Image (cartoon, rainbow, N blue to C red; front, side, top):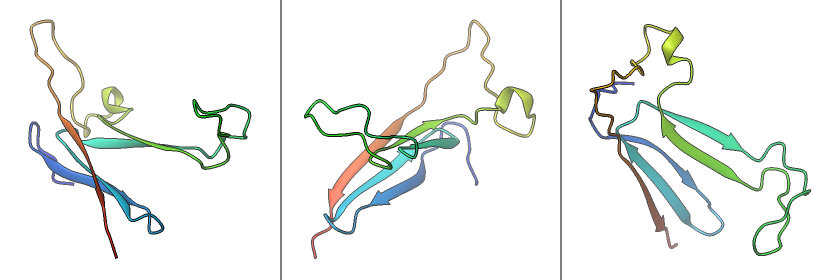
Length: 98
């Protein structure tokens, strides 16, 4: 809500109460796609040898809305050949110590 082209917004945050880790996101993009590990079944392994189990991962990707080309009320995603495209994202990590 309130997104304006080229303006920074506080887009969201994740917090783990067990470790105190917090990730906050600032971006110039209008939306975030959230991908979770809801379909992971342990079949693959991580670089460290751990299992990719149910809900063991999450990805937050700042971007335009996926259906923008078909929805005139969404921000425009079409670029002409002479247009420049520039967006910014900051993923900021902290630890809340209690």
